[in-house]
Image (cartoon, rainbow, N blue to C red; front, side, top):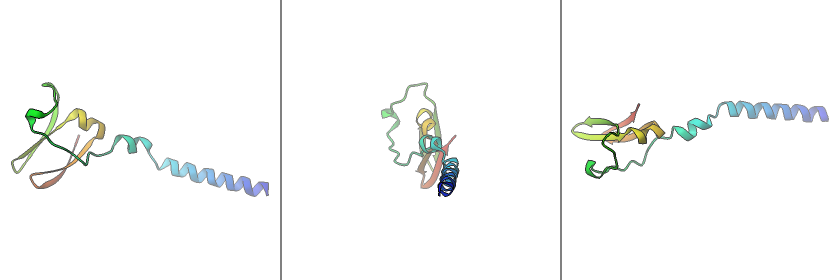
Length: 89
């Protein structure tokens, strides 16, 4: 009986370890895309003159993504000029 319980515990521990090895908590926390992006005109943007931005111009629709904001998420899902894009670096 004890031998079966020990074997069951070992198999459960092995299964838990295998599951934990496939789950990267840092990826879940750090690499979340921005999906609810709200844009403001450049004159109202809360940026310093030396802040870097990533810019895209598609079909005359110009967008700029502050690097400090994107640095946390690493990706911005957006639509520019009617084209779905993923802005990243």
